Length: 483
Image (cartoon, rainbow, N blue to C red; front, side, top):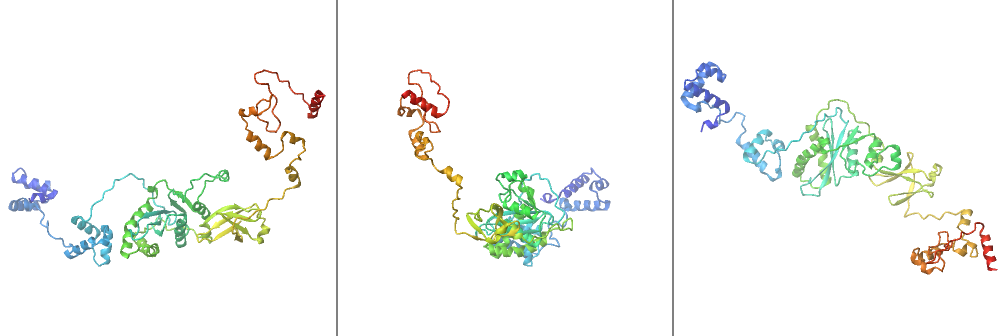
């Protein structure tokens, strides 16, 4: 039984001492095999002769160490781990909360206690090969942005999304809760970062429809060599921020790992605080991130801050805007509404020109022409545009011919009434029965003239070509025949 408790080193000593007992080895030879001095080898041999195999076991085996925690501390830690409020807490996070209650326990010691009690299991994940990317050197050189969808309130409130921004060089975090991951949410969380830190050099995001346009480029964009942009992409171009689209979640691994950390730690912190709504969660988050960054933020390789200054028109850039053409009545249509431009802008000659219609996040609208804000008023409905007055020549062309006009004989220029009658008769072979004898059975010509005469049915008759010339000559010839 004692042999089973031996370490590998003690088992080697047992093998050597057994050889000395069988007189196969001398103590000098045993000394070389054990790597001990001759005097220490004699002491080990003496204990083996007196106690047998047990004499080779270390004498501190089974004794409490001098740094061992009292039994009361271990009991208190295990009772806290059994509390429902701390369900799912890992050893590291649980050790932090024990420290808040004046119970100092190392997280590795706590891990061994939980493993011994069966309250913690080792989770091994399948490893995949990834190529490591070095962090950016400067703070603000690149910031990663992502939305973390999770049951943040653990059923106590409605589901929401946490928009997380992580600096690539330092790991500094800025986040805010929203109902959904939208363009407005991306605008708001980015504005919070810019107001606090400055304008980042680049933004690393996924290929969501908020950041990547799925539509085709217009002809103007193709001629300019530009790809179609979303409203967020247009705003980043105006701000001078490079928008980088990741091709996999692992590419922006820093923000993805940060999402996992916050889903583990922040959820449990809000559970202890009893938070179950967005407003309370955002207030708590501002205080929580101060201590979180103080602990986990690292120093950048360079002391240079790559952030740029925030522009004055940041709220106007982080908005929704499109180009519209001013109509002849000085109105602009956008979003199913019509806006009448003020008379004071008459000197700008805006008719036919393109203006920018903008909607800010708070709901206000702006109309801008070459950087100048225009005054306008919203119309209650679609403006009624009067018919354009026709010129004299257009009026003459539109006037139908008189009833006694020669064209009337063949149905030409009679307007819609004539053509509706022609369509009613049909243009297929079935209309042949309705035509007079000697007709070809073909429908009337588009010009309105009657069909050319054709051979009678059943007889092959050679068609004599009609004489060329003015229609009056043909008429005279017909009259002479009749006379």
